[in-house]
Length: 119
Image (tube, rainbow, N blue to C red; front, side, top):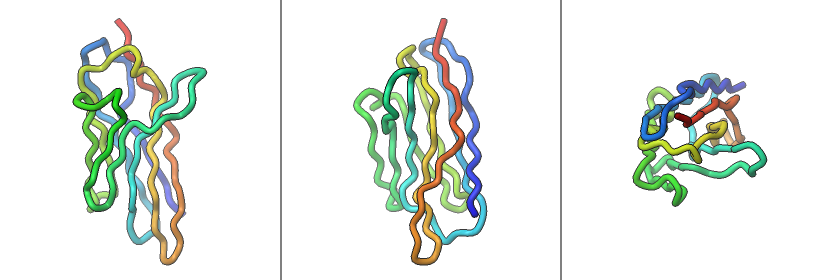
């Protein structure tokens, strides 16, 4: 069993910053991809950023240059540093882990954390 814990959301003014964290705990071997997704009201869930086990990172065009994804494999933790936040970044942010347990690869999601950018 794997437990995912997200934290770091909140209310921030345009131009401000927030840092999201997501940690996996439980019994497993390793984590391959770690992703951040977001879903605004009435919108589809979209991929914001991905960091692979190799360290390769990918970003949505809308957040390039403003958001930075990172991971600490020793702590099974992923971060999303969000700078220069805009109102259109307002959404529920979900973390996703591709967890390896023996020969099985399973998808695990965080509970979501609200990010609101408003003056």
